[in-house]
Image (cartoon, rainbow, N blue to C red):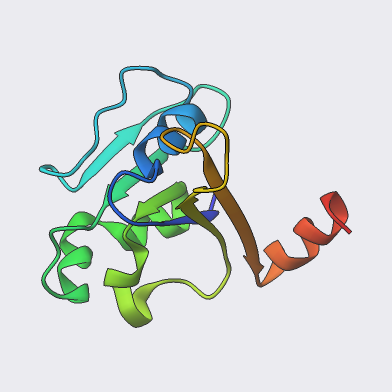
Length: 128
């Protein structure tokens, strides 16, 4: 509980695809219109999947109970830059970009992981 994963990338780079794989369900809808979907789990904290593309102001995220998600669940956040200063400093940033040099550039992606706070130490352990 309390983990925040910020999914960065342009439209079509695979943020929702990443969320589906992380959540472990093929039928995970993009919460573009609902802004948030919550997935309960028997073996751990709930996963809160936010799509903040339509937010006009960061303060609108408070109405989505984002503070509860940060405290009690695992938060996957598409378009995290829309949170401004509300985005927690301790987080894992996952940046997805198209990989134009790949053999199949229509499906290939480049993923860059950046750990902030304790996440930096965790990433150092898996990729020194």
